Every structure is written in C-alpha cells, then in structure tokens.
Image (cartoon, rainbow, N blue to C red; front, side, top):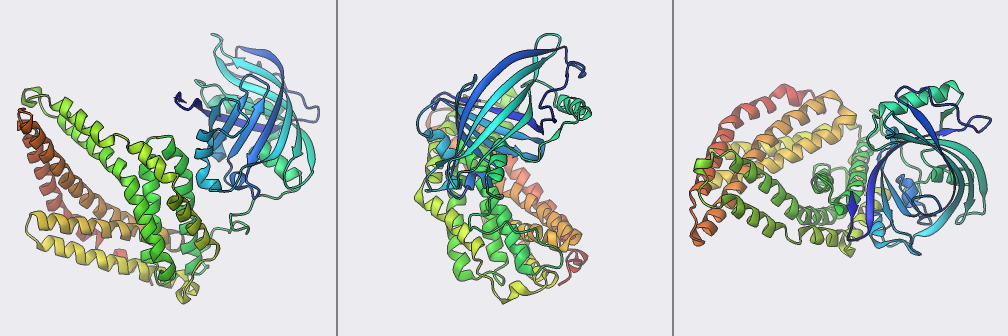
Amino acid sequence: MADTKHGTATHREIERKYDAGADGGLPDLSGVAGVADVIDKGVADLDAVYYDTADQRLAEAAITLRRRTGGSDAGWHLKLPVSLADGVRDEIHAPLSDDVPRPLAGLVRSRVRDTPLVPVVRLRSARAVRHLVDGSGTLLAEVSVDGVRAERLHGGPGTTAWTEIEVELGETADPELLDKVEKKLRKAGVRRSTSGSKLARALAETGDAAPAGRDGRARPQAPGTDDPAGAHVLAYLREQRDALLAMDPAVRQDLPDSVHQMRVATRRLRSAFKTYRKILDREVTDPLGEELKWLAGELGVDRDREVLTERLTTALADVPRTLRLGPVRARLRIWSIAGRAGSRRKTVAVLDSPRYLALLDAVDALLADPPLRKAAAAPAGNALPKAVLKDFDRLAARVDHALALAPGEERDTAMHEARKAAKRARYAGEAAKPALGRPAKRFAKRMKAVQSILGEHQDSVVAREALRNLAVQAHAAGESAYTWGLLYGREEAAAAARERELPEVWARAAAPKVRAALGG
C-alpha cells in the first residue's frame, strides 16, 4: 500500500527474532522443506536512530520510529503492531530527511500529543543477509544475522551489544515456513528472543525497565474475581482507551472498518461512564462523556454514509434489470461521492485538533487519578450486577413503549431509542464479563440480539429517507423515480419484518433466568 501524495509506502511485516547461538553463526537452512536455495546477499552496515518522547510513549505501545541509513531501504520507518504475539507489524516507509516526516508524525500524534520526539537510541548493525528461495527463485524469507551495537542518546549514557537472528517472511510465502525455519534453528540451539524488537532490548539493557503508563506508574494487573468493582470498571475503561489510541493511525490511513472500530471505543467509554455512575463521580465523567459524544458524531458522518451506500448498492443490485429504470446506478454513485467529498480530510482534521488531543489527555488523567465513589470499593459481584440490571430496566421500558405504539413515525423513533438502550445494556454486560463470567456473557449476547433487530430496523428507516431524497432528485432531473420507489417499498417491508420479530427476540432476552444468573 502506497501513499504517493505523501511519499509513504506500507507493507505488512511478519518476522521472528532469535538470540544467536554461542558461535553467533547461522545453521544451514538449505534442508528446510520448500526451500530450493539459500542465496548469500552479503553484509550491509546499518545506522539507525530511534525517536520517542522522553517518557517513551511509543515504546510503551510497542511502536518504533527510526531514521536509518545504509542498506536497501534507507529512510524513515514507522512500525505499528498488528499482532505482537505473532510478530506481525505494519511498516510505513518515508524518504530520508532530517526531520520526522509529517505523515509519520501524524500517525503517532495520538500517542505523543504535543510532546516532542527526541533521539533516544542509536543502533549500528552489521547485517549478513541470506535469501531463502523456492525452485522458481521466489523469495520465501529473508534471514539476517545482525551484530548490533546500541548507544543510549537520551536518559543515560549506557551502551550494549548483542547478536541476533531475524527471519522475515516473504510477501507471498506461507506463514508455516516460519515454523519450519524455527524447527531447524532450535535443533541448532537457537532460541526465540525475549525482546520484541531491537529497541526494546536496547532500552532494557542500557538502564531502563519496561516503560510505565503515561501517568508514570507501573501497568496495573488485570483484576481478578476478588477485586472490587472499581478495579473492574477501570480495567474496562483502560481497554477502551487503548482501543481508541490503537485505531487512530488506522483511521488516518483510511483502513477498512477503522472508523467504525474507533467509534465503538468512544461509545463504550461513554456508555461505561453512564452505567457505572455509582462507581465514578459524574462531575468528572459527564463533561468527558459529552466530548466523547462529539468525537463519535464527527467520526459517524463518514461511517454512516459508508454503511448506507453499501446497503443501497446491494439493494439496487438485487433489482432485476428490467426494473432499473433510468440511470439509477449513476445517480447513486453521484449521491455517494457528493456525500463523501472531503470527509476523510475532515476526519483527519478532527484527529489533529486541539479538542481531540485534549480529550485524550482527559481520559488519561481520569485513569491516572480515577474519581472513584464509595461503591467502587464494594465487591464486584454486588455492585456490577446492580448497574447492569438498571440498564436492563431502562431498556425494558423503552421496548414496551415501542411495542405499544402503532406502526409509523412515532414507533420508528421509539424503536431507535430502544436500540440505543439495548446497546448500552450490551456494553454493560460486556464490561462486567471479567468479574461475573458466563452469566454476563450470556446477558450481553441476548442484549446484542435485541440491538441487532432494532439496528436493522433503524437502518431501514435511514435508508428510506435516503431513497426518498434520491427519488426527488431523479424526478427533478426528468428521470424515472420508479426504481427508488420500489426500493423504498422493500425497505418498508424489511422494517415491518423486524417489528414482527422483535417480541420473540425480546422475550428471550428478558427471560428472568438471564437476569437472575447475574446475582447482585
């Protein structure tokens, strides 16, 4: 994936690191299944300076940013973790320059905020490279033996040195090859490195322990079933904060589903503030919740249009050609483009805004010094079910109100309000799952089913409004509005079907045994 406008390029890196054996050499890998030849590519001298904040915010998040000279890929490299356990990272390259390139600085802004990036470590490596290729000469993996010398540039004058082996999978190779190579290495006495990256090892061996959180404290352990309610709520909030930060660079890169996932994290945070208001002081959480609502709204403009466009495109494809009267595909495409124009630029501008960065700082401040109320010290098995069941009662009242209304606009509005309550009840159950276990999991699953029915109904309401506008535009342009009317009718039928399904789904979700299992 390349961004020609900003001169960056991205590739998915899948690699494993090993501590070299006593002799520092590489065993013969020509016998690895599928490998036809091992090609010696010589030795390259690499010089890399790693950048971070003084308190190592990037290292804390397993992100590396470096400026490297030497070798075939000199330039700036930013590595974002995808799956640390599997050694998978996205590596974004930018051309060599004196300062951190703006596109890369943007991708780490949610982590560093307004804190300067400074050189923290310099690594000089002598890299001996070998290519493992198949019978056609296709690269299966690059294996390198790196003799590394590390020098601390910020936070101490420490130095260290080591030798490691790095195996990076080729772009089209089967990941199983890494297991085959590792089996060969293990037989030669070579073991996996305990450090996830050269930077992590350099920091550890030049005087620093693993980075603490942004508040300077050690990372808290996951709460156990005997921990109080407040510990579980804070763990959930921390998880959502981390999800929000992790999705920021993905949204900036316009990766699939990234806006949706970031929006979900903001909603879960806000929902938790409301559900657990007996545990967290509302004077602190209410203003923060309003800012989260603002962020979700800004992100939702692009996401909602994306979902709606996909729904209408799929619906139109299901209409027989003989019933597609007029330039319906072209009109839908124009409508979609007009709605999306400039939306990504606007989203990125929001993520660069002082208001957004202040929101992130406020969430960090809350987690560093949580405004816990007296109920936070209560056993989780008592306090959490009460909060969850209160959200259920709120949902029950809204569902009953919606079902009592005749079909029409008033019922549509009531079902939309019930959908929001179902989502909040679901999130409440999910937040309580680590403390309450299977009963909370089942509760959340039942609430999700209700949310899904109500969500599909609301999607139909929104789609009908869009179809009506498309019909008006088509009529004004002298085109047939028949196809839009046909799709409108289908959406009406879909909404009616969801309304018929709701009582049964709700009865299953509202079963007394589901709530009784939560305790409290």
